[in-house]
Length: 386
Image 1 (cartoon, rainbow, N blue to C red):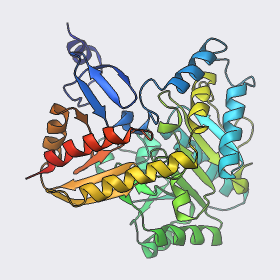
Image 2 (image 1 turned 135 degrees about the horizontal axis):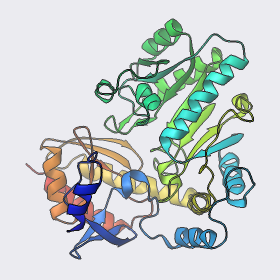
Image 3 (image 1 turned 120 degrees about the horizontal axis):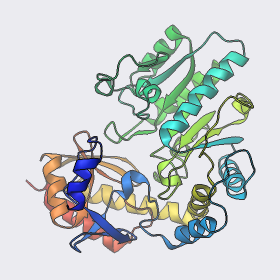
């Protein structure tokens, strides 16, 4: 049997895979089983921040594999401690809890928020998120997700989550006040919701409201973090500082890792025995993550912003394109043609893209070669033409 046939027979049918089996790659180029080469603008849905088989990442991971691959959180390890230190020093936050995914990082943030409110003596358990948001696929993060179609098949979902309209501060204040919330959680760019950037005034107004009422502000940076939006974390584009932020995807460079990063206000909310993870803070994953974060400097971020401007400027005026949204190298393209047909045509012509609702979604490697990016954008332009 072929790999595709084996997969269809033995892997649970939860993914509508493209008719493509990838076998190897380097940087922003990948090859299928027939040797055909593709420009990768997906990065494993925002994970391989420096592309495939990134040499410094491979070196860091391999070195750690040959030293100590796992010992559990009963013991100290250097990669875990140094990664936490790096994150805190770069963000002026206080503490980090490591997990294995974005959903787990968000679950930790929920626990921080409820424990903080309990410790303060507040009768608050609800967490407010925004409509059109996406926060994960566990039952609790599904409940937090502000899209009803994700809820329909899995009721009853855990209680304790309420939703307000994005970019409507009056609705946020109304819902928060009526439901006595302990935290407000948002994505600065709603990725799975269609790559929609939140308005700056709206985000700042939420920040002010939360601070005035001792409500924790949580920013979900699972997809937007680690340089993706042209800043180290997306909230930095809004000149705010959350009480908690979560991140994953691009942090690990290809290995599973999530992080719940907590600021000074709530740094002591979780204590001994309040939370845990067998694999969280794994030395190999942390070594890889540290090699990624250490290279996300201002020079790279400036390059991300430059590439972003090129994509926005080029595609926003392209034939068949209605609009371009997003931030940095997290881009959504509203097209006149069916997005599935555009993705198929791009794939046929050697470019891999994603979708987000009815938009074409691009998540290229942060360090993608500019000439390669221009070639890919040219193929996308041709596929969008009507």
